[in-house]
Image (tube, one colour):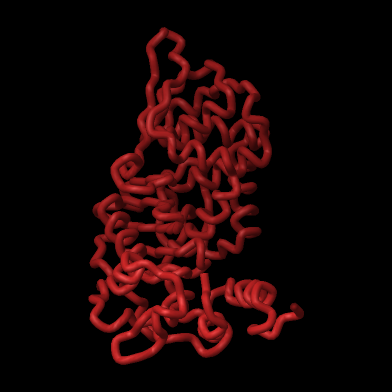
Amino acid sequence: MFTTSIASIALIASLLGPPFATAPISGAQSREIPNLTAERWIVYDADADVVLASWNANVEASMASVTKVMTAMIVIDNADLSTIVTVPEFATSTRGSTAGLVAGEQWSIGDLLLAMLVRSGNDAALTLGYTVGGESVSAFVDMMNERAGELGMANTSFANPNGLDNEEHYSTARDLLTMIIASQDYPDIRRIARTRLVNMPADPNGKSRTFKNTNKLLGTYPGTLGLKTGDTPWADKVLLGVTEQSGRRIYSVVMHSDDHFGDTRELVDWAYSTFSIEDRWMRPLYTEEGGGATTQSVDISEGHERRLRSMAGLDDGRWRTSSLEDLPKADVIGRWIRGAIPGVAGGDG
């Protein structure tokens, strides 16, 4: 891609030396952070491993049914999904959204996960907690809290596996982001979270059961891959989002929202308008108005340059992650550059 060592030096200097200004190229119109209805939120660039922006991200609040993501992780860690279990009677009398389970009927743990994550069935969550907890929901909740501690979710407390309101059941946007990141290590969760419609076993009376995913962004917002919705009187509307567009993955959390789908769309739209890590690498090599790097030193397209010109930067000083040297992956990138271009970067070549 690079035709001269000057281009290589410019790239390395941008990565290993003082960070370049994060403002967009002269003439670009920076987009302001959207004004959301959510009282707590966070948005994260998974490729760069940086938080792009947040609001009240460490303030504790009820989390509603996004709880079920942790429930799913504990179940997968401790049970065979093909195991057949019996639905306990107490699970069928739960409040809130249900999968219509009938006491005494038998389901596989894998199907119960589908009922819990797609339909957001509280009865399925209780059945799973009771089974995996050794016929004790409270023992299962202890497992949830233990895992939260292992993940560093210091401002989170679980009181049940389904997310119903309870004074001892709360989290923060930042902790829920940690949970999203952990959940992406589970192929079953990733698969189920993007399932829009599923036909489940008929009930004991032969009535068919079809579950539609509660996440209305699936199939309507480009690149949506999941993850989980929530809605209770104490929590209002909550949404954990995973989105991928053009190879760039964004995770988002909105809590205590009046419109969790609208808030997430606006927040993710804004996230994709900011510089990606690739844009940050390329930025010093593009033609700048009034001087700077020249297009003769790199192989670029007019479309790529126009896109970069139109993208918003991160305001200096508002977010700590607005410079290259703040990226947790900066050292990895530096080592890769030194190995790839040893003569220029001072590698071992």
